[in-house]
Length: 444
Image (tube, rainbow, N blue to C red; front, top):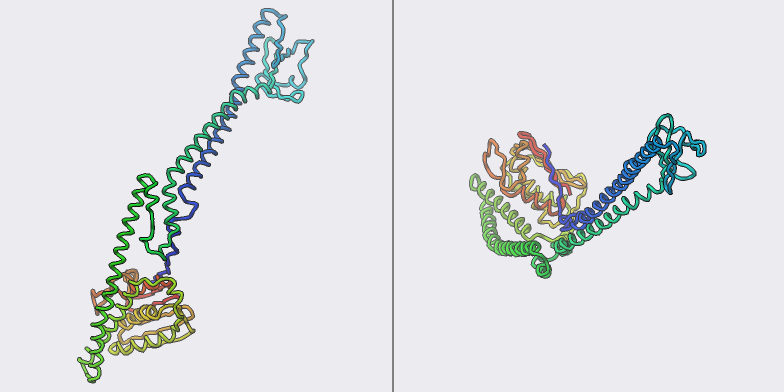
């Protein structure tokens, strides 16, 4: 079971605000453009529909009525003249004086569009008693009718809708501008280099609507509470640094004095347990104080590159002395020289915690430490963990139950390792099998 904890360093407050393409005003602009496109599409459809209505319905109905009127009058008077106006001309198949143009003779009954003499004509063909009547209507007139009664009104409606849409966009933009200004102020503020109490939102609060004012007040209250919490943590760090280090120094000094007595048996083992526990408490205290200080990125960049190979040699030697009752075979292998740019205290705490776990959970077994070009790997043949335990191993105060030491707590060791690696951009990889052992790697 392999669990990897990737380096998750915050990339700044800009990422939290989202990309600029997702801003409120950008979305409003996209909605406005989409609205104009939809209006244009509807307008084109309306123009085509109007043209179709004018030609297919109005013109067709007018020509059909004209033809019916002519056939009625011709039935009453065979000499009734063919209609002829500015836009309409007629041909009769039996009329010798005005013969039907050749291009029209093959047309069937009904209405047709025909090009004649470079002009588009609408031809209506009807038939009575073996005679055919051809009514020719000027297509240009139809286009003019469609324009004046269809396109022109639609254009006016379109311009009116464009105007209203633009006004709505301006009003919407004005409505969200306080939120935009608020986001802009927060975006420009560097929370990593300045205190949050320097964030001044008074101008926005005075010149905005009530909703934005509520947001500004909520942010102010949040900043105040955050500053109070930070101040409490700073006070605790200062007090703990003094009040906790002093008794630890006394305990370690007393242990050193007891070691001079050359005790044997149970007293000697008790002294070693006190020394080991005091050392662990000191390391834990240093780690907690370091995390509470939240070392800045500038301090991390100015840190000296440490030789991890030499540090691991020192840590292994220390743990061999602290865990003399475990009888483990310990081997350290340097496959490559590894230098890491980080404070020595951080590296000692991270690698020391992992090495201490290997010693604590392995008795009469083997511990291998391998230093490679980009990582340190610590392997043991201890009790190991199942999948559930591996998933929770880096949670504070969690410890997997074992037959030898059931229901005990791990404490903060691995949780501190996780937090420290996250702060410095390192990754932790853990692979463990219950009853066989554990392998943990720190990838720099």
